[in-house]
Image 1 (cartoon, helix red, strand yellow):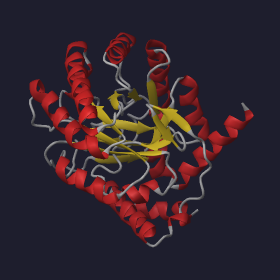
Image 2: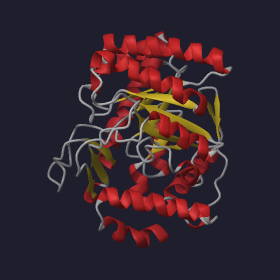
Image 3: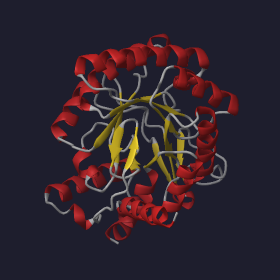
Image 4: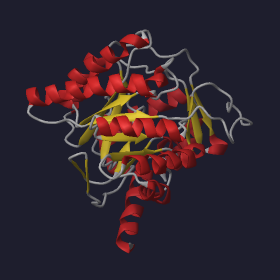
Length: 343
């Protein structure tokens, strides 16, 4: 109810300004011990995946807290896990503003943020200082000015420094907002990237005495052949999980809306069916051994259950928070709890 009353004011602001104001407000509520004002006690819906124990299957997708500055307050909303980032080795400002656009008629967002973040070292300090005890994913990428032939170096540096503070690490190779990044999903490039990262992950496991799962995040704009290639490489290199999917470059159903033709990645309700279709094809190609984290257009428990029925083990939300508010986390978790009892 509180968010519903505040949303008209937030939507009157520039989207980035509203984003930072919302996070600052959430932090303040948490500091005052008033997080209960925007959420409620969460039922336990335990899930085991990637060798990790999740209190419930609903996570926060990367992109909302790029720098790991709001982990504690976001974690207090009842998520089963939180993913921060995307983090790059060096700080970078991202793409020029404006770069974030609401499409309220479609309950969608277009962003072309461009991996804006404070850089790896500062983000790792933020994560350490948060003292978060839940499951935490760290999403990593390459700097915009790193040549593609050296992209793997950026991912390796990020993996090495994020490893001690992460429950799992996600290699983001699917953002449409960093030039040529999606070429890393192609067979040859993917082979080199995953082979190198998994070799480094195994070495780090020996140093730190624990195995941190490695995850790869893919695009929704893939044909069946491309999904088969990714699944083959994921199985060959024993990658622990795939996040399906990132935002889409498609403008189907939204091009006629205000801001609907802006460049960037589209998220929200228009992505739902496309993301679910990728999950279905991916699960068929992967078999049952690899975890899938389903993302894209999840606004209700029914949406989340659709992803789980398609083959996902876990789900993540982002855009739903902006349109429905923090209470949407509890609504989805409780709905999944009821669905589990009736099955």
